[in-house]
Length: 383
Image 1 (cartoon, rainbow, N blue to C red):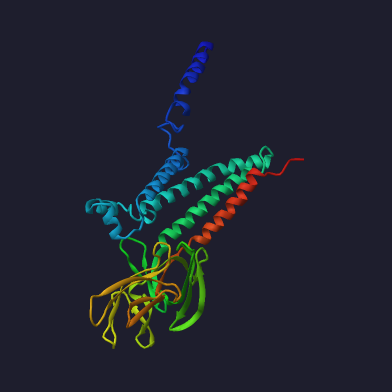
Image 2 (cartoon, rainbow, N blue to C red; image 1 turned 180 degrees about the vertical axis):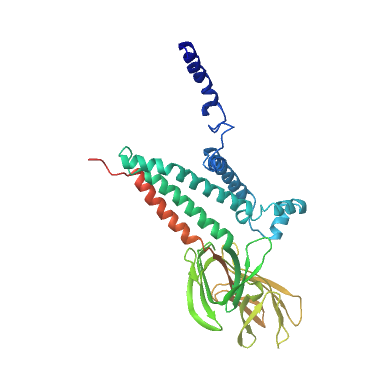
């Protein structure tokens, strides 16, 4: 072979090598005729930063949408906000209970896989650099932080799939064993035990605004009290058998409110009567009286009752009476005087009941995140 042939062969190889070079063929760096490593495309997809950005944008947008669209409201509330057609569309898309929908959970799963693959792909190279001394141990904090996010996502998914949130109202002295889930279907779920409201207390500011309210609850198993008169306050929940009870609201049973009247008839005889609103009392002296209305606050003067009286003879009379501890009396006529002494109210307590089996996993994730951020931002100084 001559020198020219050798030079031609070398030039030929030099010209033909780039044609099969990875940098000039497929975007992944592999020639179409050469087999691609197993799992390469899948790994590149799940380790893509673009996938991370897209998932975060989608989750953020859906979170905003979940704030705009009321979640787990009642059918009556949705009927006031949307037409029947709009309600059906939103319900079919899972937008009325978005955080428990399959597609929202799938997005969380994708984000967790994305973080895991990114971390596993970069960890070996970082570990080699740490062993060679070119990188500090602080680099491992980033991977621990990624792991914490994955753990938090897993805890959130566990809560979304196997947890629930419900509501129940209990009258004083009453016992319940079921709750209604906070969803549009309003499914009834048994507790597996009983809860009794022994007492409800509420105190008010001078302007009538609630100052503090609490419930005294008793938990029963098979009719026997297990925990008695447990105080439940706002922001101080009570947990029993994996269920957490929150003091959410309260109210008055209008049918249970009794107005306390002290009636003095001719001759100085007094008697106390407790009448409900719209309740009528016929007395032995021929008078008929009834409570037409009751209000806990009348122009900042306290509670009052509108009382109507029908004398044996003459026209009926009506008067608003204020609760002034017996100081104010209504003189109907010579034969009757009425004093309003207040009202006995029957309250109910509104409890929010939740079960979140993933909450402990979430707390573990937050612990890992604190450790990871500490390692990342507070590395040990080199001597």
